[in-house]
Image (cartoon, rainbow, N blue to C red; front, side):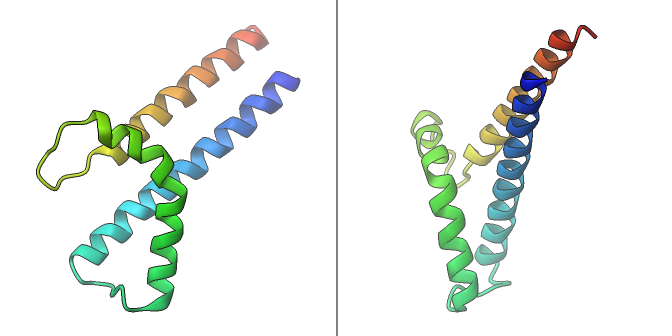
Amino acid sequence: MLLYTLISMINYLVNIIVIVVIVQFVLGLLISFNVVNMHNQAVAAIWKALNAILEPVLRPIRKILPDFGGLDLSPLVVLVGLAIIERVLVEVQYSALGM
C-alpha cells in the first residue's frame, strides 16, 4: 500500500511538471509571436516563475543537445523522459500488486 501511495504521488508530480512544461512552451510561443507582451507585469512574472522552475531541468539537457538554430528541443526531451518515467512507475506498481 505504501508503494502504491508513493508511486501515485510521483505520478502526480510528473503530471504537474508536464503541465508546467506545456504552459511554458505555449507562453514562449505567445511571447515570440507578440500575442502577449513582456511589458505586462503579470506575463513577465509568470514567465520568470516558469523559467525559475524549469531551468534546472532544462539546462543540462540543453548542454547535451546539439544546436538546432534557435529551435529548443529540450522541453520535448523532458516530456519524453517524464513519459518514460511514468510508464516505468506504472509497470512497477502493477508488478508489485501482482497484476
